[in-house]
Amino acid sequence: MSSIDTSRPTSSSASGASPSDRFEAATAPAARQVRRLRRTFGMLGELPAPLLALVDATALAAACLLVPADIPLLWRVATIVALFVGLSIRHTHRAGTGRVRPTTLLLAITTGGLSATAGLLAARSLMPSGPAAPDLLILGVAATLTVVVLRSALQVAARHARRSGAGTVPTLIVGAGIIGRQLERRMRQHPELGFTPVGFLDDDPSPLGQLDAGRPALVLGPTAALPEVIQRSGARHVVFSFTRAPDSEVLPLLRECQREGIDVSVMPRLFENVNGRVRVEQLAGLPLLALRQTNPRGWQFLVKHGSDRLFAAALLLLLSPLLACIALAVRLSSPGSVLYRQERVGRDGRAFKLLKFRSMRPSTDPVDLAVIERLEIAGLGPGGIEGEDRRTPIGRFLRRSGLDELPQLVNVLRGEMSIVGPRPERPEFADRFGERLRRYDDRHLVRAGITGWAQVNGLRGQTSIAERIEWDNWYIQNWSLGLDLLSLALTPLAILRTPSEEEAAGVSDAAAVDGN
Image (tube, rainbow, N blue to C red; front, side, top):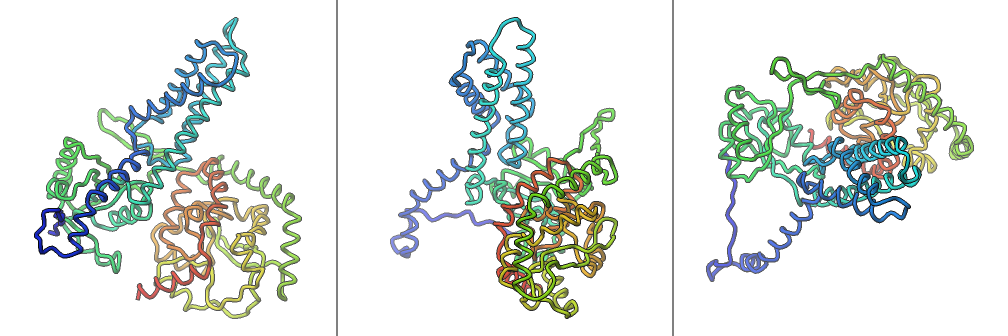
């Protein structure tokens, strides 16, 4: 079993200590102060529930009492109480909301505040006298916006602190298999969520060497050693993933964690089919997870496809001057057609011709199989520069800005694509990925998109195809019109954050070398 060295140098070291030891001892008080400040800063987004309620109540009171309007004090107090109740119903005071996706939390605050305001207006309409309805509406909206601004500031501060390592929760993962490693990887990729993986517990960690070449997992002991490892590592959160240990052994450990005040999370079985619509039901005292799945053949997707076409038609009309300018620039940049047509695989595995503004000099060379092999070795999806760099000067700009994708609005009008959905792959890649990657073909349940949930989460270009599949399938299972609107709003930010194609190609080459 691996052990963790918790020893620290002290100021009472021997007189023969090295200069580095004396320097560390001298700077220890300042270092402790910095760590204390970082912990305090990092706690902003993880306030306990009573303190969150106090923050919201203070913000509501300040807004409702200070907004200039001809509203009696009694109505102002009633507004504070109604809005506070509205926020409570939406669970915005629950501990742990600092780790909720910011848009989800702010949407809950907004709907809770506006619902309470609507209730106040309804109550006002039933009374013979009272403040003017417009004044009451302004008061409720102003108070709600005050809470939104305050919580946004707390979220930004907390996420920034966590990215720098402050305020994170040391986390143990029980189960070092594929799913456990996936959890650990997500925690490291998203430090703003506030979890720092300190290691695994597993009775049979032998498969680990096949999962992450170059970075072996830190297995701290068998599952039964959980209490001892918690004491030694200082973990304050335990995630029970999939493990070979029987439930009769795991359940007492889970209960002991709860008795000791350790936060516990459990990875559900069949988690691939668990979405945000899951509901806990009781069957004679036994809990059941009722799974409500998205139906890509249902009426909701008919609404989505209709709104997609209306939106695409409006954008084509609105952007027609820009499209004409880009077409002229492409025509003048190099000989060849303005549009580039490439076969892609869409819904139900049907092929279609995807349209783009041409950004490269024409070539008659067939697909380079070495490129496909290199991407497979690195575990990356296609995109960016593949082989010879044939980009034109205007093409570099179009690809970097994403403007080369605008002709796909025509694909949307034809019913071949949606505005938001999984990005379509070329047939040669789709066939290989479908054979080698679990659940890859699930993306073909819906129409492909111009932008997608995977792309707005940083997976544009030559990035992990396994990660793309996970994000795309999550989008399908949790689809809503609100999620589409959020994806559209985040797309410009995703384009700005995407590294250049030269940098992406360098990363993929390095990954391929590591894979060899």
